[in-house]
Length: 438
Image 1: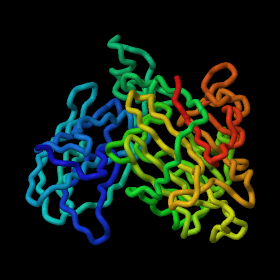
Image 2: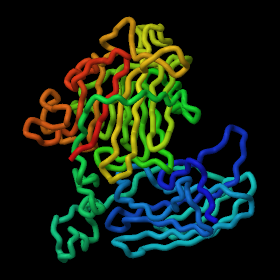
Image 3: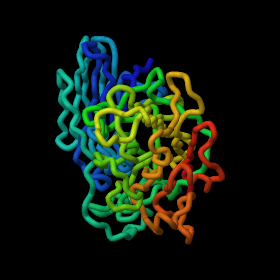
Image 4: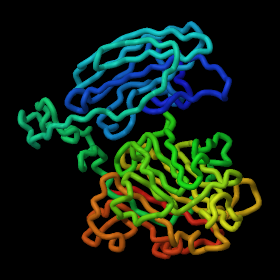
């Protein structure tokens, strides 16, 4: 019978989920690292474990395509396995290039009671090492082939520049993906269409399994922290698979590899200082006061929710919310899993009722227009935006007047949703669907 991977363990990106402080855990952790360049030296890495292991969805580790992880801090790959003391595992790691094995390493490791032991593979040196404890995981992105390709299928085998010793990684994107400014992404996704939705509000902070985004209260005015998606959740944004997200106090999410460091003062989505690969749910100068306000996330079903719960606008004298603001926003990332371009997202503001521990109206007594987004940036922005037209010229389908993709889809403010044949609903709830389109 296959062993279970540790809950929340992600083969590609996340550290294992440990218990509360003081709890002990019996596990082994497989780590695989490499500086081999993608894709000229390596394209995929395979991890095979005996006895077999599967995650909560019944999936074995299998192959990981590094071409989909360029620009993401996904290395070293990590596979935590929780088991009973004395269990022995044999592990084989293979590196592939163009379907052929270019490196193969093997090792064994035994679990030890109340310990986290590590079996580390280095595909560059060929070293396989066992460590008695779990050292800090220093994340980095896959190395990229730097030499420019000539853009030709020299040996007429259907793959551009495959025969060159070094090449542009985008010349060999996986099937169904295209190169856009050295980023491999789904060839089908070019824009998001915004429309009014009846999606109901889900408060991740009130969910039984909800988790607060760590570290935000250490900088409650402009903090940001990175979270990793669980192993049973996959999401594509503008055609590119994302595996983690930076979440900012000020109402934004970024899938960039490093913290974009956005301040509370919002900018137009087309400003050159605004990072691509981002969702701006309600980018404004927001604040946690350390008591009522929270930012949380949770996975439920096939969706992943991130909630800004009961925040306020930063007052003239920062430190605590004055009670006049009550801002509730949830981003729902929905993994439809019907293809690389079918994932969509909702942004939901406020709740349709009051009087329970999960309720709240997206509102401000002192500045109701600001609560409707008068000063906020709201929308989605491509990782490699084309900016084929201005913010004013781009419509809610993400198209310019000449029908080319804008590279973004923006909402001017919540009251402007009359463009979608509705205004702020009487039940104080507004929901926007951002649906991918070709």
